[in-house]
Image (cartoon, rainbow, N blue to C red; front, side, top):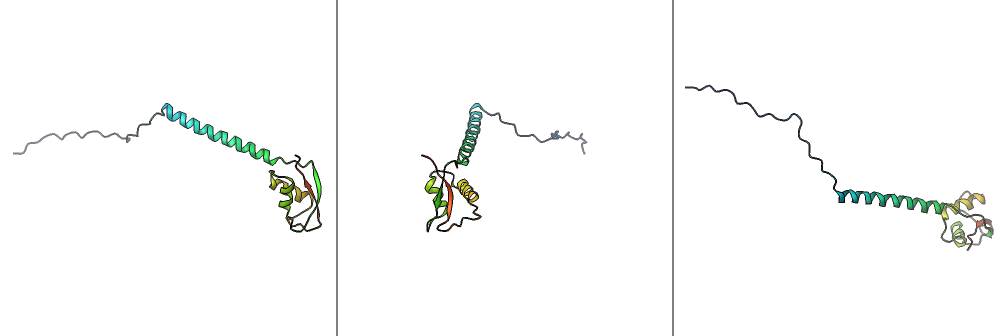
Length: 117
């Protein structure tokens, strides 16, 4: 009639799931990563040096400039200091001449730095 059999053992399953195998970084991939890091480091250092050079302004030579109609503080600074850090020079001119904003008027006398050369 009925045949009694012993239960079949179930296959064992791992308790921890298998993790994906970590891939080794090959020589070429490693060199690419190092090259990218070096390029970034050089770019950061160069931009820092450029910013440092631009922030140093020369105010050792100045003139007394009489403001004319239509003049602006920015325009006066650029006229006497081409290729300079205009923002830093504007701050210096404002502080030196007691300006609390960029408003100037004709006939006003401003002390303005002059770039030599």
